Image (cartoon, rainbow, N blue to C red; front, side, top):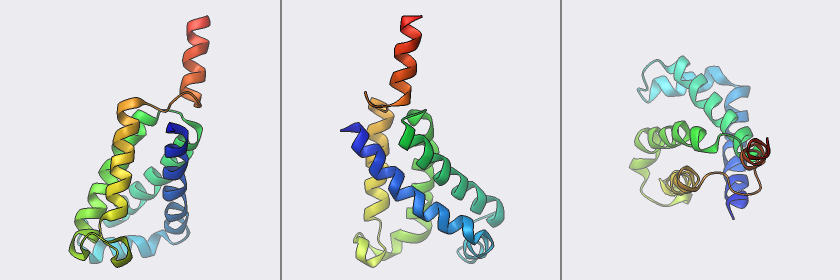
Length: 128
């Protein structure tokens, strides 16, 4: 179950991160237009967090740690972009980022699960 949750989240973060990476200057301009401070820095931070998050979630590595900045990224997205559009995902509302936050909170609470690099490394430490 946790593997499925991780893979869904990784997929959900990967494509937006790649889209941002391809045109980071436009993202920075958009961030500036919606009054996000230090738009260039925050464009790189959001993109880097989403890309690193997708990789770590896929591997099941450091999922508790990466969940925190991903949750913060989703909260910022809700406050700056989605809140005014209501709840429905079809209206660019806060539905999807809210679901992501709930899934990330699950990983923060339970870890990456049995099918993860974290678990593999933990078992190897116990054996040694």
